[in-house]
Image (cartoon, rainbow, N blue to C red; front, side, top):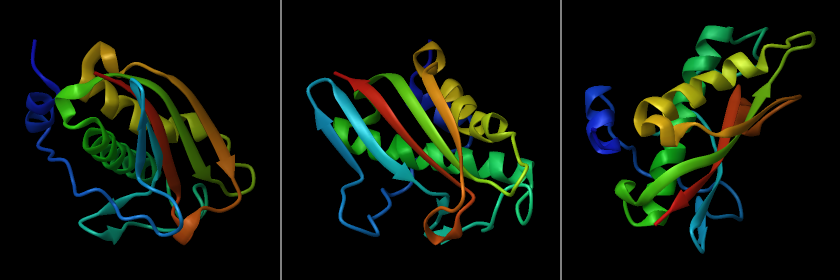
Length: 153
């Protein structure tokens, strides 16, 4: 069985630097055997992708891809708080927020981008409980934000 590090490499991905907070919070907090990761936005190489509402300025497909970026950023924050990617035992819970145009109801499909990446990286340990919530707006006008809780050793 391959490790999360090996799976990331197979996917052609590397963990990005943990995104610095834009307000009064920290990227992740470890308490006991859990890490709580703050909401992560889709920053790639320090740059935002498309902005706006899903179902208007941003397509479902692009928002789903952006959710994967959020999940990768969340993995990086969790790994940093856990003392390394190998210390993440399982992903427990994911919450995805989708900035939604009126009438857009495919929030679960958008957040699948994050859930699928977590499954690809952690295998069975990446399966998790989840919420996908439509919201009026997100920070910096991003289309999606993802937070998670991970069990760690």
